[in-house]
Image (cartoon, rainbow, N blue to C red; front, side, top):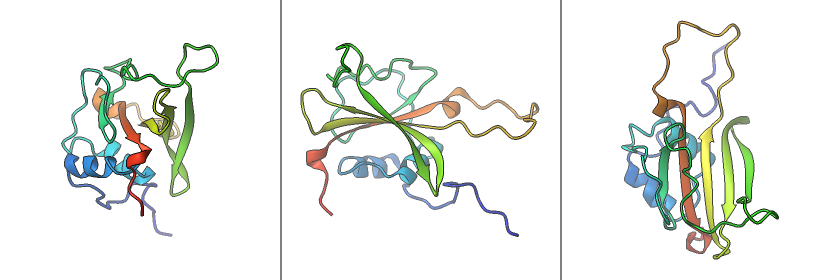
Length: 161
């Protein structure tokens, strides 16, 4: 029996730079495999986690945050649809699969002002702990532990295939 690489862990290069990611993000939603690629390789793509919350980001914009450093990254000054209580932003939460394995969490929000403008927030699901754990494993830097990719898109700008 041969060993298989972890799902989404293949070495297929989907983007070579931040500008590649940005050019795709302006025209369509990133695919699950692309989001995984970006989150796992943000440093090699030249993406730096924003220390400040981007205010009123525009369609096609992608922003990387370190969830442990920027706690309120959702406060982007856009008016998102609210739950019935009128205060809390209504977000739909999904676990996304790649090659049949749940690897990402995605939260969807819809603009209260522009029906076609949306925000998607992605982060990696915590990998299952190996049996018995490895107490000798070195801790990872915080930026590598909690990357969050936020993508804004007005669906009127999505290119027709």
